[in-house]
Each structure stands twice: as C-alpha cells, then as structure tokens.
Amino acid sequence: MAVTMADIAHLRKMSGAGMMDCKKALEESDNDFDKAMEIIRKKGQAVAAKRSDREASEGCVLAADNGEFAAVVALKCETDFVAKNEEFIGLTQQILDVAMDKKPAALADLLALPLSDGRAIENHITDRIGVTGEKMELGFYEFVSGAATVSYIHPGNKLATIVAFNQTLDKQAARDVAMQVAAMNPVALVSKDVPQSVIDSEMEIARDKARQAGKPENLLDRIAEGALQKFFKESTLLQQEFVKDPKITIEQYLHQQDKALTATAFKRVTLNVE
Image (cartoon, rainbow, N blue to C red; front, top):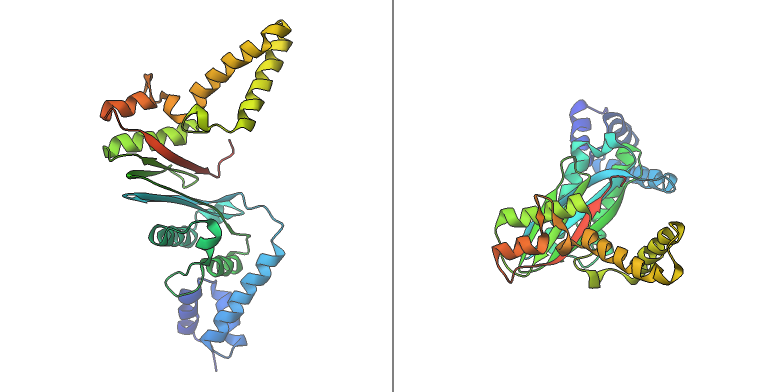
C-alpha cells in the first residue's frame, strides 16, 4: 500500500517526528500506524542509548504557582536550537502541568506519571530524543508549598524561581521576592539554614585572605567571623538588600506589607553559566 502525504501528516501529528522519519516508518510497517509509532519510539530509545554520555546543558525552565503550591521543571537538551523549538517548550509545559496537578514528591515520581495519552513522561522524552537526535533529560523538578506561593520565569526560559510564604500577600510584593531570588541567588532563607560545609568553606577562605594580607594569626578567627557575617548578609534571602531599594532588606520589605509576613521556602533553577 502506497504511503500518502495525508498518512505522513497524520503520523507526524501523532509522533512529532520528521516527515522522512514518518514516511520510512509507514513504509516499514505497511501503513500500520501502531507499528509505525513503535518504530519511531524504538528509534528514540536507540538514539537515547547512543547519546547517553553526551552533556545536556541547554534546555527550557518553566515554573507555575497555584495558591498553596508552586513547581519548577527543567527539560534539558544539547543545543539552544532544540531548546527554542515550540514542540520542546510544549513538552516542558505539559510536564509542568502534570507536576502542578499531581504534586509528585520527587523527580522520579514525576517521570513515571502519564501525559494525556496515558504514556509516562519518561517515554515522551525518549520519543523526542528520536525526533531531534539529541540527548534529553528531565534535569530538575522542585516545588514549594505554603499559605501562598509565587513563581517567576526569567525571559529566555533558562531561569525560574518559586517562593512560599506563611500568609497571603500582594501579588507584586510576592513577585518582587521571586525576582530577588532570580537576581541575587541566595543560598538559604536565613543564616541558620546555611549548610555547615558552606560556613566552613567561607571561614577558611576568609582566614587565608587575612593570612595573605599579613594579619596576625591570633586575629584570623575574628576576621573570618566578620567576613562570615558579611556573607550571611549578602547570601541569605531575608538578610539581603532589596534590589529595588537597597536601604532595606527583604525581611524589612515583607514587614512593610505585614509585620508577621515572611518567606518560608524558595527554589531557584537555572541552566545559565554563573
């Protein structure tokens, strides 16, 4: 049975594969659409195995919020050309939509969830690998929950943030905090949440700098402690100077809205080199 352009177009709509791949699959399957789809999927699996050692450093980062829950996902690929493809962005959006609906506990759980056709997300990613010939992977899935949440996607779909708060607040104020997280890349909410390994590293760096500057050995710890306090001010969200008004901190900015208002969690996902 001859393969028609209508058949090719139909399979392309079903699979997202290229015209020639669809034509070859239909010819090989004698116009059996189910078999043709399986051929295309097997191609994706073969390409995925072949490209497994490649680096996927480009991609699309999207985020969303819905009241008490917010999530961010990053679908990664090899090139910016693929990252900007509408179908690739569309698949990222579908994955995010599932995350927002099902609220999975971890990335592995999200990969196992089905899209609208009943097939798992991880299988759809493999299918896209066959279409593009590039390695793809779900690189990040993060979420926060609270009395209120906000999401922010930086133009270009390479960076997104989500923040949770202990009570509802003005949308612009919430967005300001999410943009602060995007711009200033805090390591924690407050100093007590900074990992001990980071504190130890910052203290040792400060001691080395003071030592190289010729400071007395008995003063090194005191100097390092001062440097650590500066680090906390610059690197913890609530202590950071507010980008839009450096005269106040983020904590003070939130207290201008309500004395009891505070951020309770945040996540920042980026594919940019920083």
